[in-house]
Length: 399
Length: 152
Image (tube, rainbow over all chains, first blue to last red):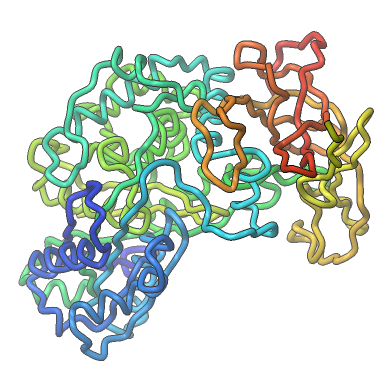
């Protein structure tokens, strides 16, 4: 594959992240309106609406594409609604991209928004003894931070990561997000404050685990031909790859919400891990490598998890993430800033909007419009994320 | 005080043998793949299309792959004691099965009592109770066996 698989990003928009408890549709509409205005495209000219679903807001959330389309006013546009947990936004982007690349439409609107309850994410209610996500809470009391903590402890054992390293990730991201108008938390924190916050899942503390947030994000995507005509310029921000890969059997690393890994008895584990393969597929599709990347937005569900991503997206070799962090390479002004937006650390997670928000940040960075957090001269960015049960999500954006 | 009936918190996931309980997995009769919880429909090995599985008892001991604890009370459907008692949780490597299985650690074992590579064994313990029943679940308990200090 190559350059002919690109789609252009005409517009990006977000509703700020927070905890307002209002209807998720409102956040989605605000983000969509901003993205359309940014694109200079009228809603009535959108041919395809791609919604990322939310499962905690009743039926309208399950059919988010139609919900947003109805709220914006029915136009007879084609529509889709996608759910893939944290990767829902990438699925929605990919649906729109596939329509454009197939020549089935020129202009698509991608929208994701969520309203979240307070506290730990818990499974959908009921008595569901055939659902591993329900069962892991019931039988083990295993929350999402439980799994993040297992990975964090492994880093300490295998690579000598320290609690100070994990805290340093939080300190960095808090500083990155200070000037981001869409971030929910815009407050500098010190390592001492992080290390004094309550232990949630040892070794991870409250300030190192991402909150759940309300928020909305949207993109206007189109064919490169349409974009050139529409803007009168060849200088486009484009999506060059969207990776949505599954793991490969046997998956030897324990993944939320499972009770066990696959067994390697019948087939040995070869090649990259799941999280490595998510980014590798994106690089391969875009025809570039990690050395070409100027910045990354990765899913820091916990501070320690950000370090895993450094290695998984190829910014360094396994076991070298702490050095990369300590050397300042991933801090704004460093070699390859990670989470210049402030990441989930400053946003909290608004599940269906988050993977779209990651792309919004890359778009603003590549346009040079990320005021107060700009990665100077950024030309190529990558996002990385994964959705429950094995939904890979990685998007490469370039200018 | 009446004695409550001890019942598994979930049917068919482990034996109710107090002395030497074991997790119940499945073994594919064609490729030998082991799964926990049990596979019933289709072998997860993509190169095997078998639908036949035998029940198999998993190894009762393993080595800690990683561990953590639960400082805050997990949400429902976890049934927490009142007042809430924090617990540890670990992921355990089973050598013969070449897989990692999670589970709570028995009460009284904290983070400082655990280490990666340490040997643990499977036991049964109460998950929660109601007026008539004690709902049992598998948990891991450190054996105190010396560790090699090596991490897989």
